[in-house]
Length: 370
Ligand SMILES: *[C@@H]1O[C@H](CO)[C@@H](O)[C@H](O)[C@H]1NC(C)=O
Image (cartoon, rainbow, N blue to C red; front, side):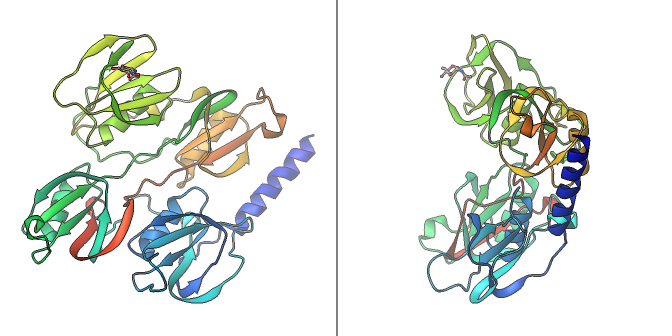
C-alpha cells in the first residue's frame, strides 16, 4: 500500500512539472481553437492573461482583440485547458492573440492595470456615479474609493448631452469567493494564511456579531459562506452592503441594503452584523479550519498530503492558492483519502461586459500601481 502511494505522488509531481513551465510570450494572430472552459469579457490581452492566471483551471487562452471584425465577439477572452497543459492545435487567425496562464511564473496577485481604454465601455456593475471634469479625475476618484475596481467616463462630445462628464464607479469582488459550500463529513476546508485581503489600515475594525438575531428585510445578494466572520468580510467589501444576516444551517450569507433602518428579530441559527468601514479587517475567518465542510469546485489541482494542517500549509505556500479542501481518512470514499485540493477564484477587477462605445473612456483603479 505504501509503495502504491509513493508511486502515485511521484506521478502527480511529474504531471505537474509538465504544465509548470513559465511562458509569458503572447502569440499575435494565433488561435488555440477549442477546449474552452468559458469566455469572459476583457479589454485587452494582458488583462485576459491575468484572468486566465487567476482562474483555477485555465492553462491558456485566446483573446479576440478590438480589431476583430468577423463577428461581434470583440473583447471575448476564451479561457482554455487540456489534460496535457498544451493547446491541441495552433492556427493562424487575424484579430486574435493567444498565450498561457502565468500560474507557474509566481504571478502578482494584485497586478497594476494602468491602461486607459478610449471608446470602450465597461458595462454594468455600477454602484455610484458623479460628474468629473475629465477622465483623469474619474480615475483618481476610483483609486481613492476603496470599493471602486474600475470605471467608465463619458466625455465632452457624447450624445445624449445630459450625461457628458459622468463618471461611473464600478465594483467586482476583491475577496476570494467560495462558490459552493456544503457540509460533508470527513472533509476539512479553510483559506490560505497568506492571501492578501484589503488595504492595510492603522485602526482595527470594531466588528460585532449579533448571535441568534435576524436583521430583517430582504437581501440584494446571497452567497455561500462557511462562517459569519467571512460573511462580514463579504459585506464590508461590498459598496451597497449596510448589514448582513448569516444562516448557519444552510451556510448562506444574506447581504442587505437599507441605509435607513435596522430592525432586529430574535431568530435561532441566524447571526447578523454591520459592515465595517475604513479599518483593518479582522482576518480570523481566514485562519479557521472548518471541519466537515466542503469548498466544492474551483480546483487548481490536488496533492496527496498527511493531514489538513499540511494541506493548509501547502495552500499558504502556493501563491495561486486561496482556499483548500482536505479529505480525511474517515471520508466515505477511500479513493479520495489524503487528497489536498488547492483552490482559487478570480479576485482582480473584472468588468462583467466590455463593449465598443464612441466617446467614453474606461479604466481600472490605480491602487495596485503605487
Ligand atoms: C430574516 O428575516 C427575513 C424577513 O424579514 C427572512 O426573509 C429571512 O429569510 C430571515 N433570515 C435571514 C438569514 O435573512
